[in-house]
Image (spheres, each protein chain N blue to C red):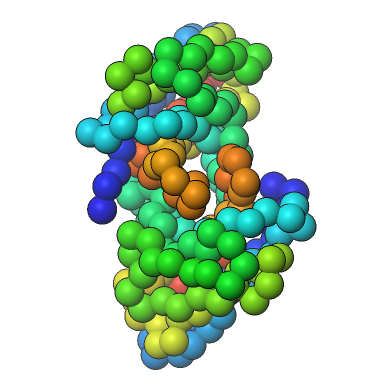
Length: 112
Length: 109
C-alpha cells in the first residue's frame, strides 16, 4: 500500500538542539498533518496544514506544506526532554472519506 | 485523547479464537477508522466508515470485519485470530482532523 517516506527514522540529540524531519510522497495531498505519539498512547495532533506553501507554528514547532504538495517538514526548536516520542506525518487524500496515509515515523530521543 | 474510547486496552488470544475490539466517540463525528500499528510500518488503515451505515476496506482488511453500530460506535472483529494479527490497534474519528484512541495491544499466541 501507499506510504509516505519519512526521514530520518531516528534522532538522538542533546537538549537545546533544533530538530528537523520531513516527509515526501509520490502523490499530491490536500492536507498534511503532523502527530506525536508518546509511549502507550495514541497519536496526538501537533500541526495541521491545508494549503500549499503554508507555514504554521505551534510553540516551538513549525511545519510547512510544500509547494509541490508532495512534501512537508517539521522543525522543533530548542528541544527539551519532553519532546521525546515518535513523530508521524500524514497526508490526506481528497474526497469525502478523509482517509490518511501515514509515514513510518521518526523516533526522537533527547538527552538532558 | 479525550473523545475516543477503546476497549479493551490489552488482550492475549490463542490462535483461532475470536474477539471484538470496541471503539466509541462522543464528538458527533461522521467518519471512524481502524488502524494497526506495527514496528517500522507506521499506521495502516484496516477499515473505515465514512458515515453511519457504511463501511469500506482500507489497506489491510484481510482477517477483519467491522460494524458501524451507530454514529458513536465502530467495532473491529477478528473471527479467527492469527499470530500475524499481533499488533497495536487504534481507532480514530474525525470530521477534520483525526482524533485517536489510546490503542488496544493485542497479542496472539
